[in-house]
Amino acid sequence: MSKGTVYLVGAGPGDPKLITVRGLEALKRSDVVVYDRLAGPHLLQHAKPNAERIYVGKLPDRHTMKQEDINQLLVDLALQGKTVTRLKGGDPTVFGRVGEEAELLRKNGITYEIIPGITSAIAVPAYAGIPVTHRELASSFSVITGHESPDKLDHSIYWDKVTNATGTLVFLMGVAKIGYISEQLMKHGRPSSTPVALVQWGTRAEQRTVTGTLGDIEAKVKAANLQPPAVIIVGDVVLQRDKLAWVEKKPLFGQRILVTRARSQASELVARIDDLGGEAYEFPVIETKLPESEGAEDQIKQALSGAEDYDWVMLTSVNGVDYFFRWLDRFGVDVRRFHRAKFAAVGPKTAEALASRGIRADLLPERFRAEGLLDSLEEHLLPGQTALLPRGDLAREILPKELQAKGVRTVEIDVYDTILSVPDDVWLPEMLARGEIHVVTFTSSSTVLNLLEALRRLGVKNPQEALANCEIACIGPVTAKTAEENGLKGTIFPEHYTIEGLVEALVARRR
Ligand code: SAH
Image 1: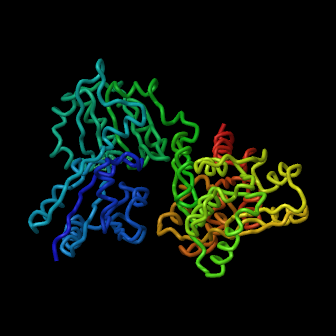
Image 2 (image 1 turned 135 degrees about the horizontal axis):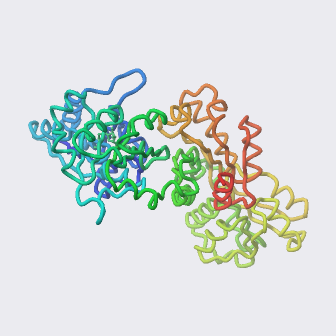
Image 3 (image 1 turned 90 degrees about the vertical axis):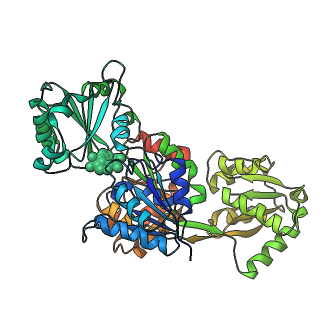
């Protein structure tokens, strides 16, 4: 068997978009991903669905895996012929022990790549509005470890030299030693008035900054109970934060928002959350697929064979449109055979999906739900007409019922099935328990039911309780009702039942 390759990849400081293109490519093609806490669970979503994910960080019931064991693990995996990505927080060469990993790989004749990442030493200050250099304030910077015990610190750091060697000093792993570090810097000549900032969990939803001076920072860090991981920045550049701070000003800053809709449909919501400074956490609990039963196929085939007979084709979702066209293709039906029919779309996105196929909806209701479609159809419908309703198997009953009441013959076809998907994500239960998910979004009733079921399957005994401290944001009143009926309290829903409306509602309630 040929040996696999190991990619030693810098994952960046936390924001999952701060990985390099090369790093992401390695991640996407690997059979195994080895990661720890700083590299975060977010990026794993890019791994192949069947890729093995090995966590080597700390767990409540286990210590961090020893470095020697991680080195050996990488070798073993590569010897099994696997392509491996070792994800490391920030840049792998900055206090990342990549040297030891690469060394053992080399000894075993295994090919490796060291793929740089954006180090927290620069990125975390930047996200707090602090540039590490500045034309007038600092023409150099140092990155220094603060990790080791004070006596070791004194061995490895020449405080007399380090203190004044560069304009800006950046300490990693130094929170616990902040008192000692400030003391040394003052002792060796930095004034006690020198500005200092600590930025905890930079580039993530939890980002928090404490500023002060060498003289008072220890007390301030204690008072704020600031915990690792944090980057310490010392020097005049820290004052730039007053002018340049930016992430904190975004309307959804600090909000980690769970997105439960199907991965294929989540991109718009995820992008909007991201634009507004929130952190989207994707946990898709539904998937759609073509119905499999022969009966379903026959029924669709028959309904489409009478294309010329329809007065209406009514589409109620983007999925409905997508799958409708898939079936046309499957049975070789040219859409022009619906030449008599008018097309109605239940919402703007559905209309857009139609438009992308060259069909302008004849009717678009004011209110984006089935009832809205009915109201606006009222004057256009004539008894004796025939309507085709291509929809998902979970679509609501109200539309066909009302149409029939008006004497319109309806032909319903289930063009797709919605099924439960349980993401392979061991982190969500833990994040919920720690209060790290602030908002949960639901874009349909099935996302509500499926999230509860998915959590149960991930071992959460009482999903309602697990979600009790999250804000529940629904796309519209029907979804909100399902959420409330299933024990989720305090739901909000927007005025306009669209993704944009949902996002606006999230922003509005933060003002
Ligand atoms: N290789 C990493 C550093 C590893 S040492 C890099 O290049 O960023 C671990 C230390 O990095 C932490 O103790 C903390 O000081 C810092 N760190 C990493 N990510 C951080 C983040 N998101 N916010 C604040 N500090 C971070």
